[in-house]
Picture (spheres, rainbow, N blue to C red):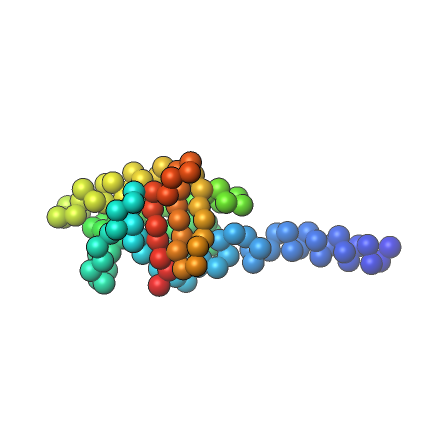
Length: 134
């Protein structure tokens, strides 16, 4: 009976462990947008490159849309991911059209795949955003 109790507690603990969550390894990385809707995104190697950081413990994300700082919440279950309302600062800049498309595309994502260093964010079967960890 004692071993059964330990086994049940262990199963409960490991099922709730964030280490088993599909996004467990995403934290402490900058996910740079390298492709949007099949088109490569030019990189400037500056803080203006569009990227996302994941706060895995709190299911929040932050980053840059190419012009403005962005943040919000996300939900994840297995391979399904949804980005909640995306909050953004409201500066105007040359790349604002890119940012508008990026934010609209990000909000349309419904699942993901990880392929090496790349995160493929998808809507249905179409890869709409490709991000690379750095």
